[in-house]
Image 1 (cartoon, rainbow, N blue to C red):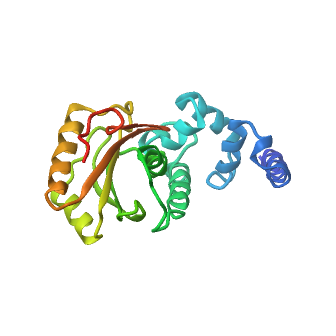
Image 2: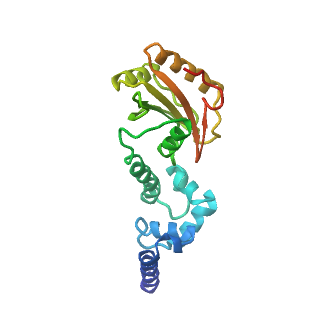
Image 3: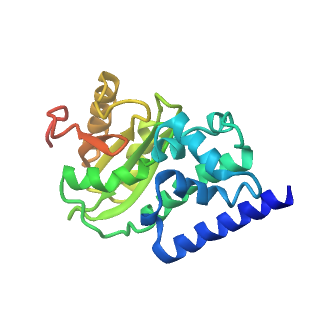
Length: 230
């Protein structure tokens, strides 16, 4: 047993040194995952666990997006390991969104989509966001309006108006994600968007677009002709 643990320790040290010298570019996907698992699995063969995770879920992205209940079904993956796997993408997403600063310009629907995609990266639940801009299309704030399960998220229409008024916004973008589907607006999405547009219009605020995000793709309702122009 001691000899086996020494072998694992030597292998782990070599992999850590490889990362220090060359970064993740020198690693295959299973090796990168194996390296991460060192910090949750102190003694077991994490190479085997990494292969099992990739075989079950198909890709690194799918592993990091998998729910904890499914991760723990893989042999060798306990709750602590599953928590580490789920924590990594959420910390990364937080680091990306912290780069957004009030005053940056979001000039059109394409820029809005690119701005918003990172807020949904690796998100398992459907969430609804509202981005408030001033009269020069500069970012004021981004608010979460609602969060639901994997297929739906209700939100209070009054909150969309309340946040926009509190921010003294002139323009607003809505966005939500389809965690298990395509970036295609549903009829319910279109109906809700039109209700929000009318409510904002009544207080002199323009709804510029509603962006639907799925994985690394997004659809603009305005560009698709599904949203009336101001």
